[in-house]
Amino acid sequence: MANLKKAAEQSELVKTVISLDSNFSSLERLSGRIGEIELNTEFDYSQIRRLMLAFAESATAVADEIVLLAQLIADAKNRSEEAAKVVAVKAELLQSRNNDEAAKVEAFRELMVKVNQLNEEMKVLQSAASADLSTEEKNRITQELANFEMRLHPLIEEAQVIKKDAQASRFKGLEQNADALGQSLKAASSKLTVVL
Image 1 (tube, one colour):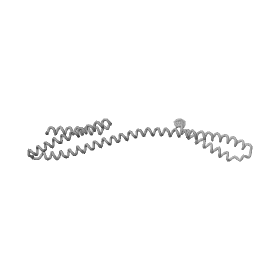
Image 2 (cartoon, one colour):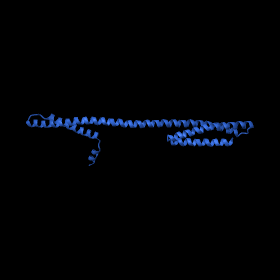
Image 3 (cartoon, rainbow, N blue to C red):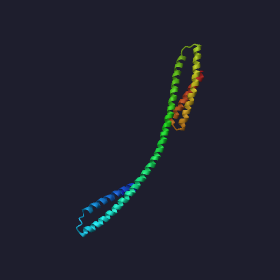
Image 4 (spheres, rainbow, N blue to C red):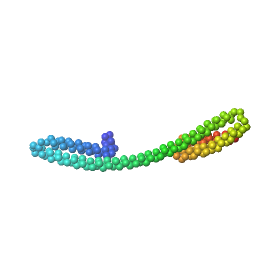
């Protein structure tokens, strides 16, 4: 029963190959039997006529199944090509998304380089500000702090652009990172405004 169910589930291509193999085996078997007959008696002639008729039927079945198999293979090739086209479209979309993500991640990395550079400069300025300073030096540091505050605004805007781009492209991790960086930069800007 399991074999019948399995046979029913087989594709037309598999069924044709199995049938072709069976008919081809019959063809070879009949050919072997025909070759063995000596043709010495009337019975031998009668038997060979019957076997030749069966051989002709098997040969016709083999030829028909070869034609059908060729058609089924051509159909399978066409279906395979259609399936490959579907996959190629998705692969192209995936590659496009990967390129888009790589570009956005690179933009974020470049922003982080700018932020880190600004942080290093701020540390130097903060250590200088903690020393005992003259009025002139205090004024110079105040001016530099004002410059830092002005330099922060483009970085905040850049973080917001990256966040919006990441959100539009559904890059959740990058969106969260850009948002966190933007919030940190806004907080730093607020502190500088209070100091100034």
